[in-house]
Length: 378
View: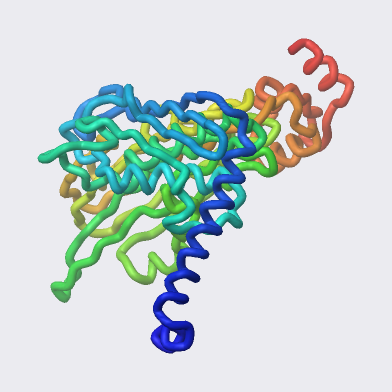
């Protein structure tokens, strides 16, 4: 870099840098200008404040005027006692993530990209909390809700680019001490959330947090078994959990693991018990997350969404929520529905009720006449 500055001279070097930012600005402005002028609305919710059940709404009004956009969070609920309040910097980053992932991914992402975007974030709300509000989890939740709300608003402006909601995660982590005195910490990454569908493809069966857009890899089971005192019993796709659609949402997984020694368990089951993978463009919602902890010799119990607990050896069973579907499920190709039935991610019964596809008794083919008649009743 020093050699480049020396070759070009400081003034020319900074002109080139400005050119990079200007180029990104122009690309994003062209994308925004292609949207119809208007005002669009998006909203997503959390069902807890980390301690008690409650409804917390993130509301956004998105106004497009020419090549500029205003993202206004007026009406979003106040900051909370729990640790999911967002800093202003996190809110800006989450808005930029929602916008950049919606448009052409070849648009450069730098400071110039967002010159034409104005963000209004009321102070004291959950997306611009004031001291002493705790913010430990804000880069995951409430960032997730911000992205989904922005996606919903943008989907009204350009439905073809809409992405159904990704579901929330079920993972926590466990920590313990080995016989030699060293400590270990293991995240249950295999209980991550599930992507929603788009116009082009079904949602992936499982992926990392929405805020990483898949950039957080899920480690293989064998590596974890070699590194920690854990044994994996199941890790498979769930049946009848994906949001139905022309493109169905991700299936989510059933995850069962035995932690073989005493440990401290930290629960982070944001996706537990409520729908988070909402469908778009007439697509259906994904299923809810379920979770049980079964300490050896004790009764099985449903953990809290957040909390810390010391346990002896115990089994975790987590069934992660499904991603949202995209488009009318009755428009899905019956052959693709049959494939899902054969793959045990859609049951014969759900093929009929959710997709209007009648599978023959042997489960190997589609009854086309019965399917046409069933879909004709919709």
